[in-house]
Image (cartoon, rainbow, N blue to C red; front, side, top):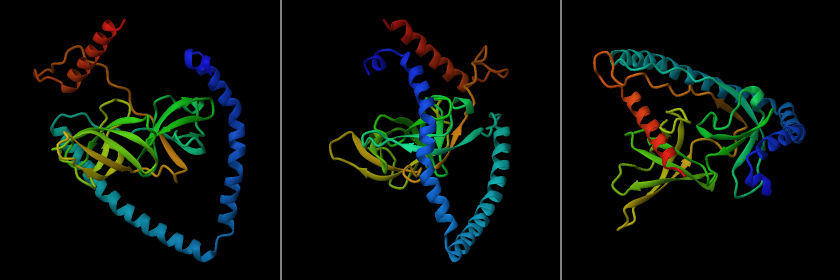
Length: 285
């Protein structure tokens, strides 16, 4: 424990030990898989018929939404072309399945069945069918450890989907709640607002649902409001996840001025970030 805390070389040792333990994790998950298989095999025929009907209705609803989405996508592409904005590309991903959850009540982490042999890496975003789940914090050959959004040590930048206001969301140590930090008392944020990833930190791609505001408390005389939200992802129920591969940050061009002498905001912001990093490195002892 002392060596693990003091020396970074223990990370490789821990990764090798995790690779050795991976078969045990698979064996532990076998009973639950067998129970799920048995429950499915012994399901009542009427229940299967009802489920099939619900799925058909869901497919019809999603097909209708897909038709509208195709029209909106074409319109958005045309508008971005008129504004000479960069086109957004689809983000590649791999699927993953839950292997185990931590039993520590003060830690909200899980292990999934994808490792560096599948392309997983530390810091990789993880989502489920409903929203952001967390990020990968440790990777072995065949499995990865994911820090969940609800963990008290996890924080990420978000924005209000309704008006674009940007804040920081931090886990509250409970699966069903997160805290929105440093919200000015006069900020336009309401119950029911959807919080999505802003993409400012460069780790999480923008636009993914994070949480929905459940309570906004204004304490008289205090400069900041107390805002709590409920995670969009089903952190306690989801078993299947997507590990995203966001594109790397674009390198800064030789000049921040375009041919028509219009400044590139993205290049300027990137240059400012690199300048701040260089200043911090020079000031560090």
